[in-house]
Image (cartoon, rainbow, N blue to C red; front, side, top):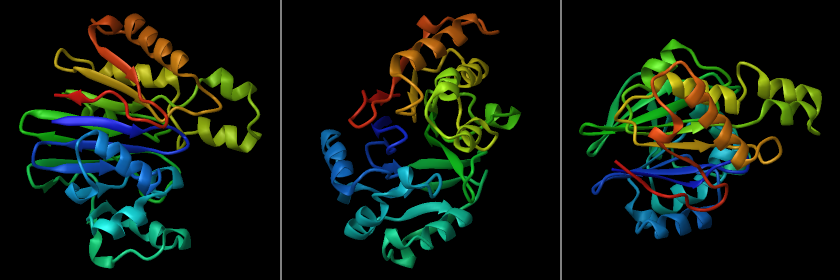
Length: 265
């Protein structure tokens, strides 16, 4: 089972998850051409895709969806709220209604040999979800765009082999940065984005011996730095209330606009 970020950041998000037999994308927030280029680097073509999992309807998660889905007639999995929100977007163009597959939070479904579990998250979108994906005993998750986490989030993310988790902003950079006050409050709010510190604190609650890879994703271009996210999360892990040190795990920062190292579990 492989997981790899094709692009991750406030300007566009797209993650590949697959087995030998099944190939999925989580979000297509970059151009179809760029998505296909990333897939080619992984040895996959757009025609090999078995499904696209959409977390929510914001542009940095769906901007390339219409082009890719129409070209290859790929099933699109999303919650009812997300489907309705996307259908109202004129910029998306026409997508065959038969390609849409409605999913519900906490109701597992299978795509060939992969099991997918949509998880509730708190974000300012219609009906957003994160995804936990399993292949046999192997489990990975893509969890971004959440303003807060709770015990439910922690339980859903336990027992993973790899995770791509949001580390969107440094609180100090955001507070002194150029964003207007209402936007700052939105990002910092309960339906906004996870800070570097909170990303590390959430990780502290799901660490275990079998967690092989941690990828920090969805970094803000204006309110974060890869080195800052990396060091802040490492510090939270090493100083947090857990038996581990940051050195016990392979931690990476997902690249903004190019393929990140592949995580094989």
